[in-house]
Length: 107
Image (cartoon, rainbow, N blue to C red; front, side):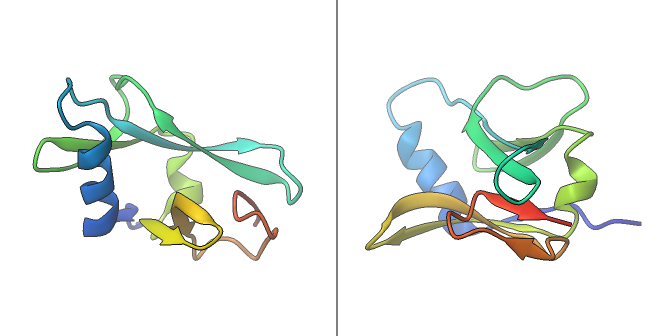
């Protein structure tokens, strides 16, 4: 059985900051074909669907659709704030290669 992705406290904290003072919107993490390495991550605020995996903490939700779930098995969804910019990042054990932009990978 595949392990579901894990969301770090730092990622949930950042999502909470994004949603502060308004009705909370879930963060969707999806995988789609394309990008320079074959697959790419699609990370955006979105409404939940009935068949989504919902990862939740303190009222904040991260969604993964059933098609993307096998590609994200055991992955860690994190937030980083570095010199090159602040963004959600994915440490994916299933990726055999990734590009420099960090949003594209291959399996």
